[in-house]
Image 1 (spheres, rainbow, N blue to C red):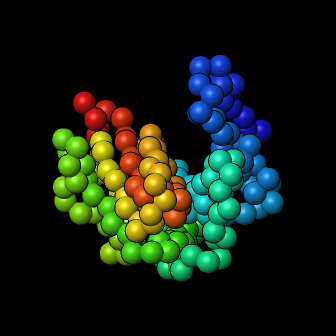
Image 2 (image 1 turned 90 degrees about the vertical axis):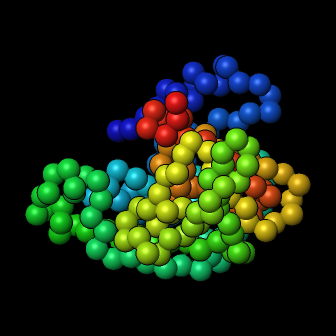
Length: 189
């Protein structure tokens, strides 16, 4: 019962070196199989959902991707996210989520970017957080860059909202730097 027409509209506007991917199509079979792709008490996808999308995007570009099982993990139990915080329902509280965090494969760094300069190191994984902010320490817009220690000769630009926080770290093995831009009004003017 879910669909999107955005991809069809965008496809007619892009040039030959830009690909459009449908998250709806990528995640549909995983959701129908009952996989834990979206949190029950929060509006974000899980890191597993973000991995599936990154894997599809990278595979579409011809990269052999690292299997999810090769990433070291940490877990946070009892996560009550934005949907719970808005409704404060006992039923939702009983559905508290588990946040699985996939650690970068090599030492990674993240920085706020201002006037084209890296300023103020930010966490890639922030285990002091007990919610979605564990991914990149939350949104720090409008510009941010992740460096993962790989020497690929390639960089990526991710135009995103907070869903990019769980997604972008999975791009790190394939690019020298992953630049993130969040154009939402609260982060960008």
